Length: 297
Image 1 (cartoon, one colour):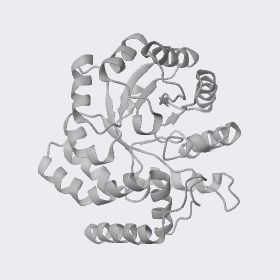
Image 2: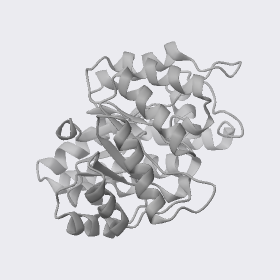
Image 3: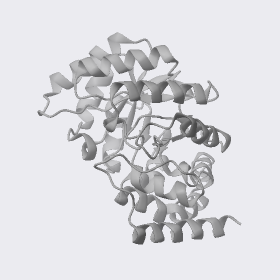
Image 4: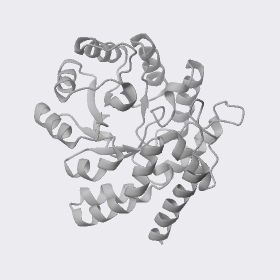
């Protein structure tokens, strides 16, 4: 299934009701909208999906509902990160049995992990399932920074790890990874402001929450780079860059949920301790979206 993952892979938020319960019907509507807009894959239960703030019962319900909503129309990679290897394995098995095409694994830990511990973490998860793993490096949220050399080692020693998502925002790391793996491991961009540079450098795709608010521009950017039309790609990238920068700076669950509400789609508010976007920042976001919408006419 690895070759099926390419292009724009969209992260849905996890909607909550007013009394702070996961809102599965709203999640299904959001995912259906993303599929209909033409994204190339769906990645529930990542950072945007507030996976870290769900208990096991909620996580299972969101995983099941997400996969049912996609209904095999697109490849689906489910984020299964957990503080413990035991917990990650439980989630990996659940997602696999529920129909996930791949797993996205971000190592997170209270204690600093050694390289051997990180390799073993991935190997144990890989041994527990028979679907591919997308290694996810995002030190800003996990506190663990996987150097290109360690990522290449994991790809060599853990057969299940067949893809890499790099979110540090350092294009040189992507170039280094390509060198170390001789281009044999597809890499995906996870840094929104780096989308153009990463795709131009050969990224297989872009994992992003932006399609929740504006899917046409990320899709057009990917297609322009794929066609070798870098002039058009640059214009498309800089048109959407204010939105990409804003959602990253303001926090993805917070800004995406505020933007969805501006779009007339109520996905609730982020789960505490996260707070809704302020009125002032909501006004800024409204202006960014209005400018994008005007440019699409």
